[in-house]
Length: 159
Image (cartoon, rainbow, N blue to C red):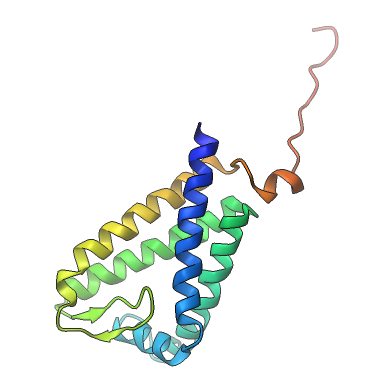
């Protein structure tokens, strides 16, 4: 049962990453603007993070959907979700009202504070799915099962 739940966790989390990255990929300037709006990173690295983030999201999403290097992809996914949760909590605590930029957009939004609880809850749920995948590692219907065949060690004879 845990392997089938892992398939669902892989697909849900992976599709969310793919959609989030694909929406941002065509407009890197808006992605950079969204990263800048959080006011957390040094300005020198904001453009790099803003431009690379959609690519990382798509790669993580694809590896999760395919079940390729699942545990490693789930670790990256978990770290990203944790960073996003901390970022949203940070802007909320500082009274900054920005669109999270999770699915494109970003920047000032006067109604953003009302969305923060939902965005945090969504990301906590996705973080929990990612952590589940870190824990379970392998799931059914995964490329990992083709590449990394399970090996069994025969019991020593005479015992």
